[in-house]
Length: 254
Image 1 (cartoon, rainbow, N blue to C red):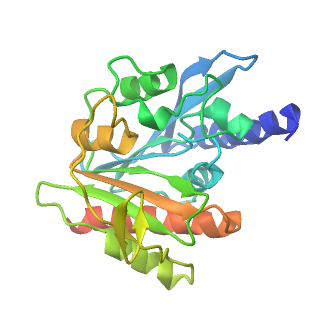
Image 2: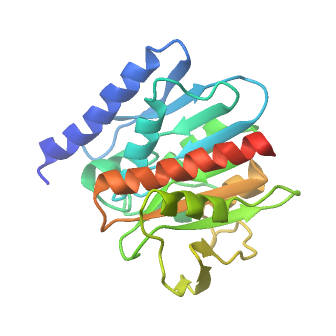
């Protein structure tokens, strides 16, 4: 993709977020501007809903070659009526330079989703840490895509008596006519009707997933929906919307 066209893709995201920031029910902030490799790209955070009560943090774009999560999160926030009973913190594109370049890694060749166990993480990961510092959420959702998966699937970590929602999310995706992965395993772990078999994972320099960081530091419940990159973008976005909507419904019934 030509550089100008690639930058234009993120420019459209910026414009949509700025438009959202004009709404009375949305609080948009620029966490910082990444000035590297000839780029000057803002990193955004967005808040909406009540300051007290149930809260969810939703992130996307930590891998720059997974655009469906970014589109799904921005489109979700563009809905005319956002939840009035759930506080939402959104990180619409954690890795904007990778998003512009269409690469999994950032411009320094780093996979940001492997760095949250480091004492000093790459700057983009540090921005996320600063944004979430000292905060607690009822659920954390990190939207992803899988270039090899035949259908949708989901990672879930849950504790503290909270009810799992993986099966409900899979059912919601299936109900809109979209495929669920029938692969027997994902990354060496059993995949059972779209739900990755839970495993004990502790944040460390070797296990630096953002979802585990959320689970250890900020929430009793984390979800990683994975849409199959082979499907058209609208279908992948619909999968992520089903995951977000079902997770929020589960928070209401908790």
